[in-house]
Image 1 (cartoon, rainbow, N blue to C red):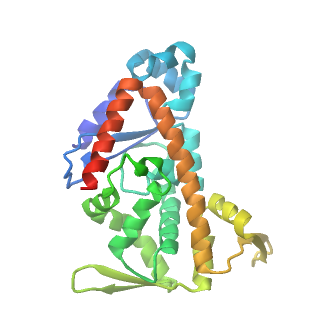
Image 2: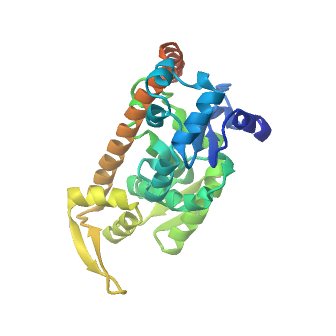
Image 3: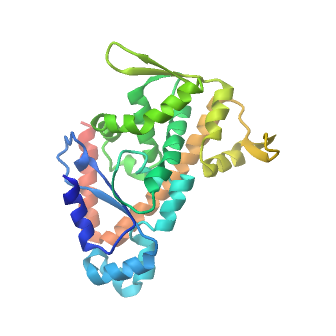
Length: 306
């Protein structure tokens, strides 16, 4: 599926300020022969956008939404609102709209320079993955852990997702993961937090410093929202920095304690977001479409268990 084909969908919509696409249909190695592509749209005025889209594409919305709520109701269940998108990108609140943008995506429209802001979130994702990994692992293990963050706590993984989904995503787009995350790996290597070694199999082996000081450094690189929630659970310490400003750091007794706490925070965050998306999908798609979509997902899940 080429860029022109992907952009053709946007021609039937009101103008958007951000658009990216993702899905197995875009993988170079699409073993499932999937044709589904997911779009994330961003607009500055969501109510106005929905009003225009309602006139242009009434069939995009469930009939009950059109009759009962109109654009205001659609804000709760329609496309991603740009204010939420910016919040996610700056604060990593729901792992990029529940994890979609830390994985390789194809950006079609970006009038807000979101791709550059993205770097802070990529670093946050790699930091979280490192905290959850053992002292030694492969580069592929790292990307798989990063990819799995978006499914940590996702209710769909219980019954309606391919159990091998993460592995398939990483193997099909390994080069893209590498191009995105290598600069941050090199940064951590310069800080002597990571070491790289080549193996005979062609894999790159990685070892990391698992000491308490290194763990504190990783936690300090997590997004403010995650650190704040960890601080509530583990406590906080006041620290005077060179500028004379007092900052609050998460009190860490051990690396294992920090990793376990962060994992709980992330799982809770993704679980709430995935539940909200599932409910919104059922409400907006209508009964027939929702059942068809869910049955396709469950078929994939059962096939992956064979």
